[in-house]
Length: 86
Image (cartoon, rainbow, N blue to C red; front, top):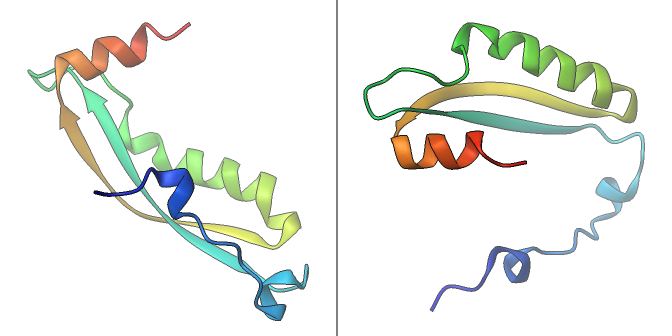
């Protein structure tokens, strides 16, 4: 039986990772949720702006975001759930 995500996390203890000057690079793959008919959702043409904004916030801390792509999840149930979160 798979463990919950929180239990799968590992503590990083390698000395390089504990050095604040060591750069950390993370590949981010965006999942855009739309209605089942393909309408709605986030405009993928704006993902560069999102990635740039994240990098502006995190680069000063030696943390770098790399956009590795995106896909669409066409599911009205998920779309409505996400758009109704307070």
